[in-house]
Length: 137
Image (cartoon, rainbow, N blue to C red; front, side, top):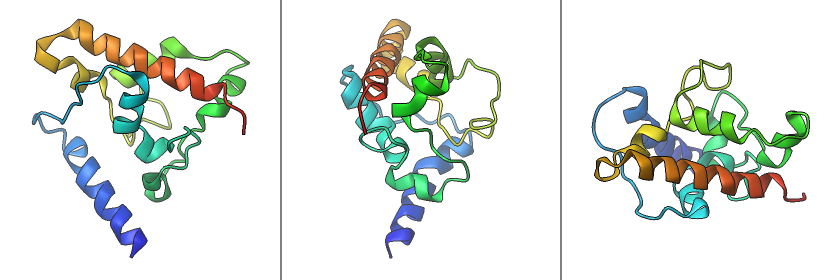
């Protein structure tokens, strides 16, 4: 039954994204990084960013653990690269080539047609992810 609930969650969450429809996505009003993470990322990445969110179990690719992100990048947190990935500006990558990870940048930019506020959301989200990268296991 638990697996079925996750499957329903995945289908209802990812189907519109996979279909590349133009319907507006639900957007929270907060620009706080933690709020954005909880609303858009935690279902896959988990509340602590360990890659163990409830949806991660049904995805084809392993969801990255943010606590080890800097270590996997030679000790440097890849903030600008992460921003580009969220905005959908990076070239196709193996982990995100089929867009299992939604691109939230265009969704964030739809807020009252304010592109700057969309960028603020992405930067605050990345800043929050960076705090997860510094946490201990």
